[in-house]
Image 1 (cartoon, rainbow over the protein chains, first blue to last red):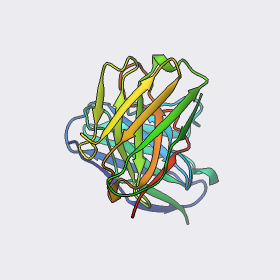
Image 2 (cartoon, one colour; image 1 turned 135 degrees about the vertical axis):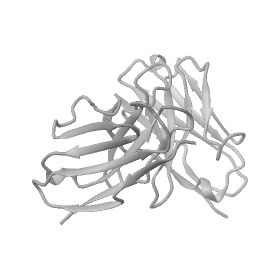
Image 3 (cartoon, helix red, strand yellow; image 1 turned 30 degrees about the vertical axis):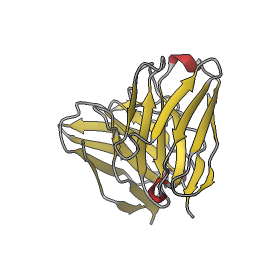
Image 4 (tube, each protein chain N blue to C red; image 1 turned 90 degrees about the horizontal axis):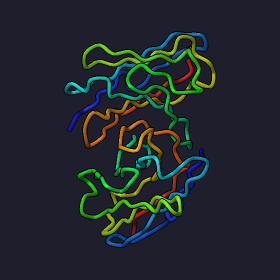
Length: 107
Length: 120
C-alpha cells in the first residue's frame, strides 16, 4: 500500500497568513493526488485534484503543487472559513489512501 | 448534485447492515461511486469503489470478504452490504461521486454521512 504522510499534523495561524501543508507519498504516484477540506461534523470537500488543478468553485487562494513524491497545499491568505482539517489522498493505485490529516487552527 | 445516505444504526458484533446512497442532480449511471468511512475522532479511510457500469469493484483489505458494494442505476442508488460487522467498523460512512465512469478517485460531492455503531 502507498503511505501518505502529512506534515504538520496541526498548525496555528492567523487570518491573512500564508500557510502550506505538505504530503509525502511512499512511492511515485505521478500527479494522482487530491486535497480535501473537512469542517467539524461535515463531509469532506474536494479542493485540488491532479496535484494542482483547482476544483470548480474553490477560491483561488488555494493552490497545489508537486515536486517528485512531495505535494504541497498552499493557502495564500487565510480567511476565517479556512480553519478546518485538510487531507491529502492518493489515487494512483488501490487501495486509495489518505494522509492522517492536518488541523489548521486559529492563533 | 446531491447524495443522501441512509441505513446506518446500532448493530451487534457479527451482525449485518445495508447502507444506501440516493443520488440526484446528475446522471448517476455515468459516474463511478465510492464509500469512505471515518471512525470517531480519526481520519478518512477508503472502503470500496464501483465503476459506473458495475464492471469493476475494489475493496480495502479491512472489509474484503465482508462488505459488498453494488449499484442500481435505474434507481440512482448506491449500496454497501456489510456483513460480519466488528467493533472497528464503527464509523460515519460517506458515499461520494467520482469524476469519471471509472474510479479516478476525485470524490465530489460527498453525502452527509450515516453513522454505523457496532456494539453489544
